[in-house]
Image (cartoon, rainbow, N blue to C red; front, top):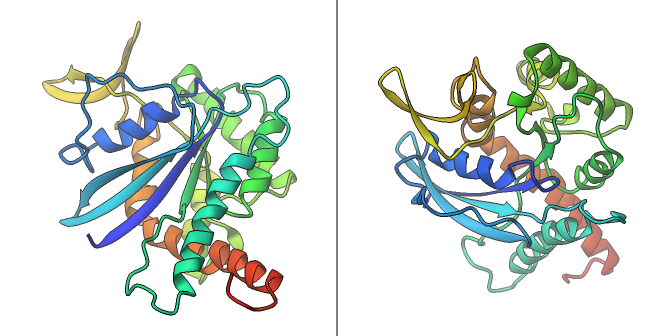
Length: 280
């Protein structure tokens, strides 16, 4: 297996996190290798759990672990409800650190670190909830956050554009850095490409579906509505294909590098420092 990577999905219940993840593995990048049975009912997420998928991209096989998280924020008191997720992410850093400082360490350390967290935002069209801001403020310090507007087909094109702008503004005002973080742009070319993503694509407005329909003689993943089929992989309908390519193709290696060089190093330095420079 040439590469291993971990992706996490977080956000309140009912935003279709599990459906979108299943869509990710039924879309063209991996439809042959996901091994997911369309007849299976998607269980409602109630705990943090890791599910391994093998996907093939350009002839290269890759193990991608998806961590599904509790639909937090469903309680009357949601104070500190991001803590189990933050704890899980830090536990993976700790696991890696323990392997790394081991005298007889393995040639290839098993990597369960979370390289990216897709944070699902409710398509209200108004503003982010205080809980969204709190979650992203805390988690952006330990993991790469990619904000995603869920169920984007509930908004018109104008509403979607306005909401995306509003979310970007709110994140900026609250000092929340999402991936790709400005401070990690390596050169001018990098900055130009990432500025375009930060100012236009983010947050990705997506629609997930695990059902296939016949459209113009082709089978496509989509959602049936009274006015027609919303095709998940059609860029004129939603930005799912952009998100998939971003996470699985164009930025996967960079997500892993930022995780290792920034988030993990920050954790590692703090742990060794707290321990007087000795291994944990």
